[in-house]
Image (cartoon, rainbow, N blue to C red; front, top):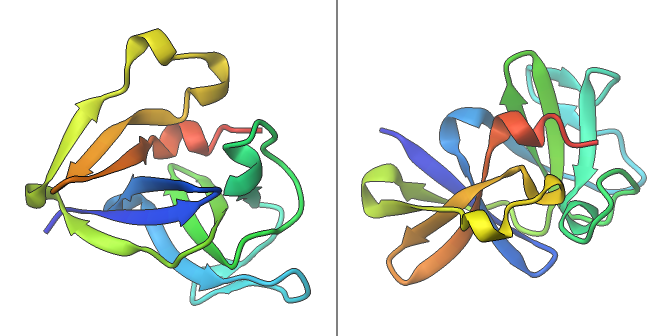
Length: 133
């Protein structure tokens, strides 16, 4: 069944399509993160800390407690987040378009707004997220 993974970081609630998320791992600054059965954090995996991404600087140190591994084509990104996430079934969610008036180069990874009940989350585009530098 299709689903979204809802995560929190930097004071934001955001969502990713479940098909793009390969796992959520515990992250600390002094350990090497292993992605069970999928390799390790290496040159082919970009680490983005959501605190920096959503505050204007994408690359940087690890401030987050967890890392959501997102895959888009042959690109993999570990997105640092504060919570391991919760699942929302696609049939219980409504995807609202991202306001065109707010669209800009720095927020191109935002695909829309996910509404689940009365909760709203920013929906991320895995393809565009994988291209964030």
